[in-house]
Length: 597
Image 1: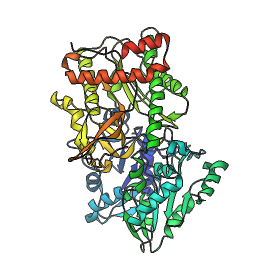
Image 2 (image 1 turned 90 degrees about the horizontal axis):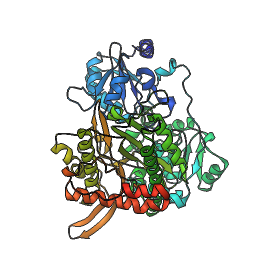
Image 3 (image 1 turned 120 degrees about the horizontal axis):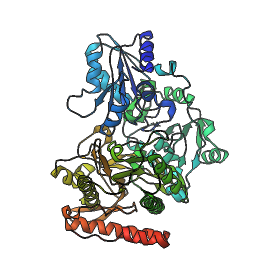
Image 4 (image 1 turned 45 degrees about the vertical axis):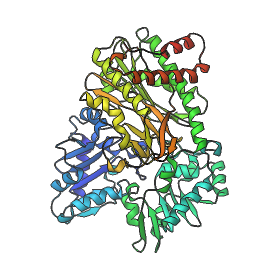
């Protein structure tokens, strides 16, 4: 058992708590957080980005999704924390688990700033018959976490209108229109990517997420940003003053929320900490709706669309040069997963307008690739061998937008199973990219186009097929996505429309053997309109060759081969101006058409 788990139980006994709940989120319900908020890693040893930890005096369980089952099983070994595989038969829900372990008249503890209001409400509804009490003002791990990292406070910068396509004032006006439609007097915004989008500001508080810690309250006649002054350069301060944005400290946020008496307050409860909602005066009406800016920013404007094409050409050059480096060095020069992660970062840094990686690079060889979100470390990695498969999932933030690309390459001879699974993933990706659908469709409508080849062969992958992508913002952006089953918090039924920008990333993972994923980003575009309505299609923005040398073309249809050849031809047309000499000849070869065997 980990020492930290014992220490947490000691703190629980001091506070007379029967159950303590810890989530992965920060004060803003963010998916990715700074080191300061990684309490689950500190207590349990699990370092994934999704999970909930429930601790009682006798038991402890960590709930995570299919992306992390293999990783969590390894990291939780001998920790005293049991892995709870979300969505799998036999796994109790968090609510059921707490109910079973909570005594009558018991006490539930958690840090109310970092646990969502809706999450707590769901638990309390289940526990209603137990007459429990809630203690939400205590951050217990903070009592014994030695050398806890401080909250970061990096300077932020202005994303100019030539990149964003819309001014701060234009976006605020659009938000106020939505407030008026909801009859709201005030709008509390807690989500960092929404704040960054509205204000056209980007930050550096969370690695790979260009956001800065802050809250925002928009009223009919005022805008107030709550943030540490350390975030604001002289230029940014002047910009905010010019746009009549009042700046206060984060400490003043809760005071101002408590002063919103007799008002209609628009706030998304699922994205607000329990403490925020409990601070709103009882005299006020809460209008619980999705944050309006989340629905605005998911559809990219014309300026963003054109910029994103430029970003993906740059990124495609970097990834394709990496492919050339890998193919020409594997088996000749020692290469390990950590080397590969450093190399792709080095190549991206050569591209003009590069800001930072858009997430921690997944560089996984052989069995490590079976862990969807595995990432190597300097002292923990595998050496690449001149055989089998290597998976690289990486991306970058540029002033022109955000990229996210996965390629799986052969390092040498592959087994027939590896070749077959690789071929299925390529077919799946190409088929999804070619769908035509009516406006009003959601990702739930389209997912079968990707999974059909897997299901037909009694295979599957345990993650969504596609997620929304931000513009020089979070690489995972709600609400659009592609998956086959409803996950309520993912808002899977949200309709696709022109400007929706999302990933296409089918994969296949065989524990102890190999993992494969092929990922491109696609822009939703208007296609054809007639008496049946507006039809939509996808335009693939990601530009880097899809390897053909290990394909089993005999299992591909003529249409599959046509789609792949068309894509690789388009890659060559877009990237060839940036290559010369031997690299150009090589690019021509890897992009050449394939034929059915």
